[in-house]
Image (tube, rainbow, N blue to C red):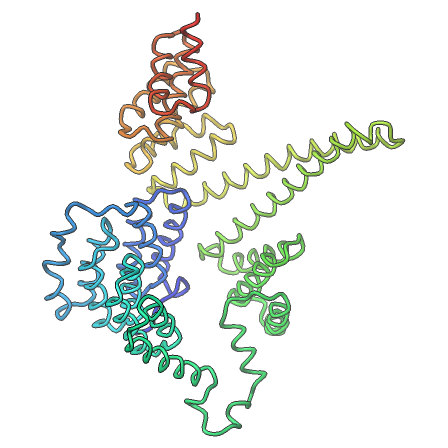
Length: 484
């Protein structure tokens, strides 16, 4: 059975996948894990999703094993499930891997179930996970090498057997298999396995190069221009094709990554916008790329304007002070500052608009409510942010951060007593004195200071200082109180 990519996902699964990627960026790992698991339930052959899930799980658990890992459901029931229902066995394995991503029994169960389901690539991934967690276990490495050979991935087998031989030069089996695998890989790369004669090896070379370029990750600007030329000819004949417009947009985006400039970015935005118009905004992936690139465009303009202002200010403060055109530059500098303020507002508006669209599409998603409220707060729209953050408090994954941001909204509105309630409630629910709790206690202390509640203010600062003497200015605040 073929492995699925993000392009093959059903619409609902693709939407969940995009939310998951957003959650990973925000380090909301618990939410990301639940989303990716839901995606895999709909698309069990989505290998990229499994790989991302495992990375998130490893980051979330920080290498710590669950105290239940030795009694995992996977190890107790997995064997019988593989034959009866391999897909169910894969889900069973994932349940254990959520809290113990390098669990040996669960990864072996995932491997066996994936083989039974006809997904050797996923089986290889399970073995790769175990080898990464146990880099000196040559028995596991041998199993992975054999599996690569059974898949026809001779080049990967060479890498594994070479590592075994380097770790144990006396392992003659690894040495022999490494040579055999290298020979197989060489034959495949030359096309000797399928060619009837030498003419087959050189026939349609130009067509082969073009197909190869289209199927791999683009890294060369000239290659992109070649592909753009081919796609333009098709697009001119069919300008209502969303797929063609999307592919052209992606190429311009790739080119911008290699050779950043305003023109390629603007072209990418135009074609994504065209594709988005054709599908009436129904493709969330296209809408997201369009939004991201529009924001990137404003960000670049913002940065360029900042650099211009900084350089001009430095020049006027130094050599340019007595220049004959100094006054002209000062006027231009003032215009530049106004433009920077406009870009600041435009940037905030784009973020808010994007967040609102996502909320409108999924009004019950409290994670999206939190993100929307956060952007409104950053833009100074406190009245609009408050109801969104109040709703976000109902989500366990965003509850504490939402309460802290609510407190900041109330501070900006001068409602210090209500701000104190939010900060205090949030801090009381935080167990570990991590960065989030320290930030919340610090904000609470500042509110108490504004309210004239000196003892409570100092206690907040002391609580932080007991754990982190160097946090902001808490040491100075506490120590100066003894002097007074």
